[in-house]
Amino acid sequence: MINLFWDAITLLRDKSEIKSFFGEILTPTEIRMLSKRFSVAKMLDEAYDYQTIRAYLNVTDGTISDVNNRLKYGDGGLEPILERLFEIEKKCQDKLEGKRDVLKPPLGGVDPFDLIELVEEKLRKRVKRKSSGDQG
Image 1 (cartoon, rainbow, N blue to C red):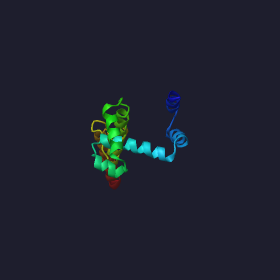
Image 2 (image 1 turned 135 degrees about the vertical axis):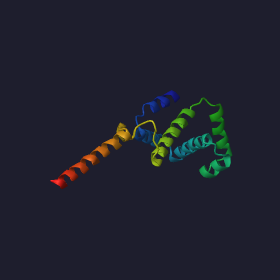
Image 3 (image 1 turned 45 degrees about the vertical axis):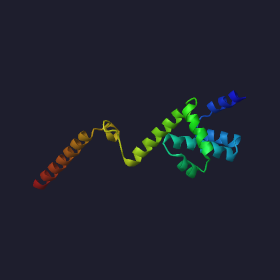
Image 4 (image 1 turned 180 degrees about the vertical axis):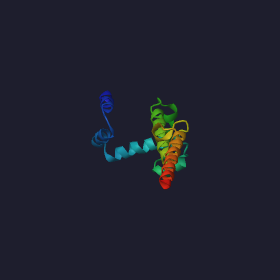
């Protein structure tokens, strides 16, 4: 019975199917409870204290403690997901802040110095055309 449930989850293809599946199999309260437990894990991973988590998520110390114990002594099922979420959030934040890899050329692979030279060359040609047009 439990393996059937795990198998069903692995067959879900995208976020839309996941939302639909869990929306039909869980009550709204159960979804909220699971969401809160996962949020507790995320906040613990980000080093928030119990008081802050309790106030923000409206959960008990027992829930926080249970999730904390699972993070510390569980099978490690949450860590890879929390790491992936951290990477996604970091990329989104970097994008919002306009950060980029300094070793990776911007503009679809065009080296900025090549771009500067190209613009300078076009400006020189334009000036040359204007000056030759004025003399003729």
